Image (tube, rainbow over all chains, first blue to last red; front, side):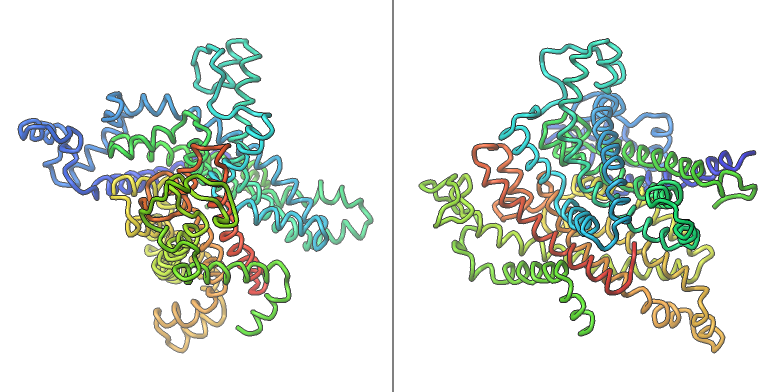
Length: 342
Length: 277
């Protein structure tokens, strides 16, 4: 069995434990709600008989561990219950809203890596000089405001004063695109409609930039710190003593070892972005999980709240497993090791 | 302490951070006396002067019911800073104790405690807080509770990683050899070595707690109107962009400046105390 496969199984095992913990946490949050979930579900005009009947259906009279057992059995079958807000299965609701959020978060993550890593490398190569100071201030500034503040500033500057980008939404009304995957950038290409594809990308850019800003700062700072640490290693000093060109040293010797710790943090940043998407989506009227999440929270729609949090936690765990595997592929010590990894 | 402050003052960016933090703290404490319109924190209406752009009388303009935005920002800083201090005062000791126990004792304690920490860390912090606020009533106390619940695991992980490294150090072994108890070693020997990292993180986290709290109230899940809060002020104003830009831009910049101050200061502290991520 290869080391990477063993790592994968190990990570899946840990994720499963964490997932059970997450389900317990979500279940406890749902149970601290003041009041009777059945009464909240049926509204103020429900009769006592109706409430008793629903309490029976929801297993609310069983002891808490038994209720948790039912909850776990349901979610393992992929049944997250019915939303009181839309009267549809929660899984169906989430399947409708999640792709819009993921599309936004993936692009924001790509922007974060594409801009943050080079900035960090730049800062490390010119340590103590002006590019370093510039990146430091920029990074501190971008992490200093919540996503909705950047969203409002970007919208004001680049949608109103300089009308370069659309103000809100995912696609202009003139396009009718069949939803296959829910990712509009993919659906428009599947439909072969390049004008609509351009339009969808155009709508994506401002929200994605707003979402990526705080991540860019963090990615740059961490890459810088790791690069600086790598630059102090003896093998870099030797390469410098040989008279290798600085850009060759940066590219071939310093970059890859520094990338590995950055990747771990990028995985964590992904989680932060999933949360911040709630804020950016609200500003840009983006029809994603946020709009659904906030709507169900204001209506105290328990099944939908629990389902939304669970799906976000699962998405985050999957991304982190992918990041771990990427690190394993990048790190020859893991790739070729015969011993187990922890 | 004096030495740390002197080095901090020598770095222009850290000095700027220190000044911003002091300025904002003073502004928040003195808000009832220095605000041009001290009554505008609550449910006051002045429809003769509503939705006015910045002027000599109202430096940052007035909101939709005629309240002075500058005064409201000063009062909103009170809420933000109180929330930050309370959350960190509760979350830091909890996280530190759990991290120390897991890191020093190891074995089953480590296994169980750190898996619990993993569970909390595997839900995006803001989503967890939003979910908790979803089932609780939106009040200041509950917002503090929700943010604290998601904050302690980060301290547990930080202290845990340091404590696990220190566990093998010679001085710990020396203390064990002369028969010191586990509590003594964890709190008297290992904890002092974690303090620089904890202090740095607390400074940076004041900024992040302000961000999370304003995010909650931006979504309508935090402090409720008519109490002034930076997040809800941005949310109210966002519907009137671009014409009434002062409704959103000034509260937004107020968040940015406060958090930027704490970040500059924390970053400077990290350099002085020699702590990296």
